[in-house]
Length: 191
Image 1 (cartoon, one colour):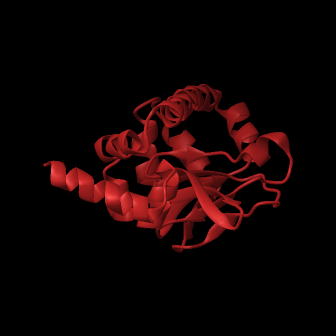
Image 2: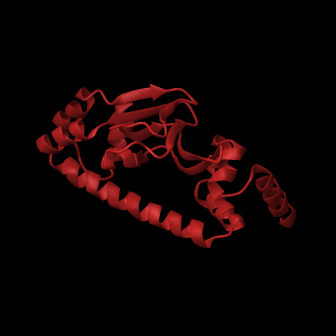
């Protein structure tokens, strides 16, 4: 498991053996089963997640219906808003698939940052990338039609079409599962 993390980190920084051992010693690697809810609405948490293998989903429940807002797959991180604002969570986080994650909290991060300052730089870079990606995603959701959102998903994240149940994909692009079926059929007929 740690090799997947080290390979990812090597794209940004080089790690000494001492730094690798310090990360492993934090005991941050966890396995979760498909369907496991990691965070519930109203729950407080100090855990952030990084997906080594698998898929996580964030969602709200609005009028009894799940509204999926994001999927996180291999080499993507998620720090729930409640960790930062120290308030109860407004949404849920669940495993769409069996998943292997790193699970860390701010205290662990502070200890690593103090001992190895380059990790703080790495986290800043990753945070900036995540922020830019989130802004683009929000802009596209506001400006794209459902068909354009679906086609964008097909182009940029085709793996999700096979990994995620249709009702969650439909919710993610802001339509009903029936509308997604009609959309897919219409696009198939155009070919």
